[in-house]
Image (cartoon, rainbow, N blue to C red; front, top):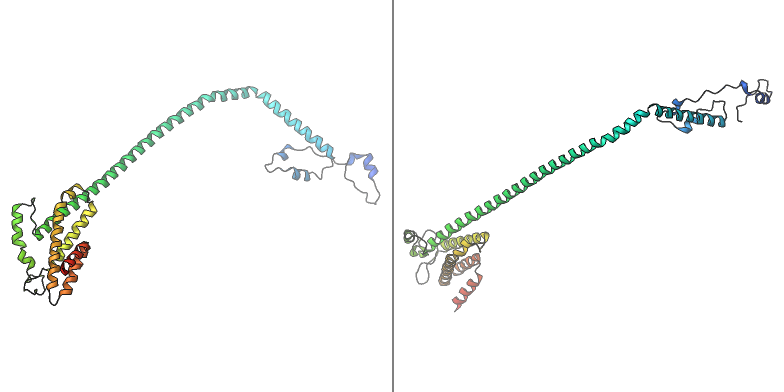
Amino acid sequence: MNRFHFGDPDGSDSDSDFDEDPSGLPFPEPLSRVSFLAPDFDPATFLSSLTNRHQSLEDLRQELRSLEQSLNKELLDLVNENYQDFLSLGTALRGGEEKIEGVKVGLLSFQRDLQSIRDKVEARRREVDGLLNQKRQLRAHADIGKDLLDYADRMEELEHRLMIKNASTPEEKTMDTDESATESDFYDGSSEDSDEEELEDGAAPVSLKRLERHVQKYVVLTSIASRVGEKHPFLLAQQPRENKIRSTVLLDLKTALEQASQAVATRDKRTMAVLRLYDLMGEDVSAIAALKNLKV
């Protein structure tokens, strides 16, 4: 048995006295259960706080066992005293299955309602997407319609300027062509946009400025057709008129090229100007053919 030893003031050893009569040591107080209820309870810290207890380790173990038995007995007594309450608690838990089932049914109903709302939102989203696509298609069709109207107006204007008679053109409109743009006006060297010299035979040359405007208008016409799509039914129906305009413009260019070869002082300048108009139309092959005919 381990105990603390103390010495007499006169230096004499009194261990035998304590061994024979241990009643002089202070009796340790019982362990308090409050010490074990601390949230930060630590066994090592608890044991280190017992250094001032005059008690053997075996006695301490026995006291802890007694405290454990006491707690177990209290717990058993508590269960026995509240046995009916424990039984009613089990019954209440079994009866809660109906409540759980009710909650489950409510949750399933909420999920169905949520899915219904989600389906409605998705249907509305698809409807909005369809309307937006329809709006884009209508806008694209409107743009195509504007281009087709512009194409028809420009073609009619160009036919009017080139004095091309169209079967679909009203008679009074074809009559106006003779009044607004006569053949003599097209070839008249004294017109407002003609500053060219006369040819060797004294004839008035083709007005290159007027011819350039015709070429530019034809290029705009073809660009509109390319933007809309040359396979469009309306454009396919107008293809003969466009081909006739092209042929007329190419014929005028050929005439201007032949006249440029007869010019005295401005032959090279006029020839290059006419070739530039060929290039603007993308008719390089036609220009080469016209030049070969001049050499012949």
